[in-house]
Length: 123
Image 1 (cartoon, rainbow, N blue to C red):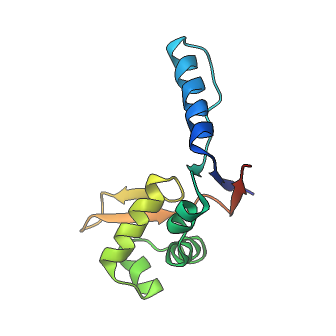
Image 2: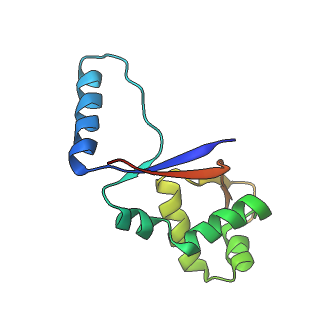
């Protein structure tokens, strides 16, 4: 089971991790890249993982639409709002987008590569 990690860290904790990674990169030392999306507050994470975006993730995972237009139809949402939400989810690594060059129109195939989302809160 592939799990996407979403975490909530304080700003100072996030900056500390960034400084460690930057320092290692400057000195050409190996460092372990952390995968996932991180936020500084529960409210920010809640604004990111809206019910509509979770609905999109489930529709992509269960119904495997071949285009964003098909995804909009499946979820009964407007095409522009689906495109905006998919762009946000893609930027944070929850959705992978693949272009189909052979299609008459430029089709973008969305894919969810995770089975679950793990939300943790550091204290």
